[in-house]
Image (cartoon, rainbow, N blue to C red; front, side, top):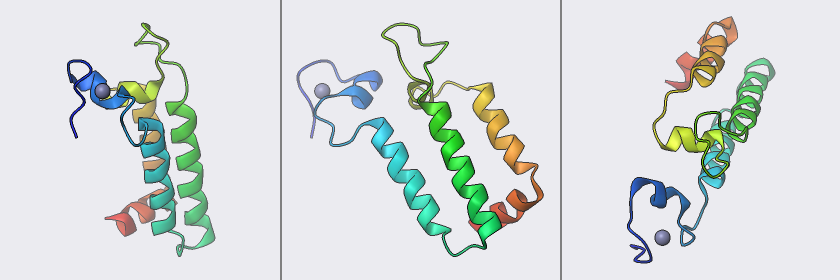
Length: 108
Ligand SMILES: [Zn+2]
């Protein structure tokens, strides 16, 4: 349903008070669903999934150094489509892990 209180630009789509869920809640739901999907993996792999999920959340709730107007968090960088090298390195770090490679194959 469209909100008619203000112009519906990309920014407003993510911040509208009429949204059923915030972008943070969507992130958490996605990570929980992903963890659930891989709950049957062996403990070592499941630990990697949980650790990465926690690192992603920690990253996302950190104040953005780029979006300085309105004290935005890094999660807004993501929904704006801004490339963040720290997030990239976080994923690459895990991709270089032998176990993560196996997990990646399972995930695909
Ligand atoms: Zn709205």
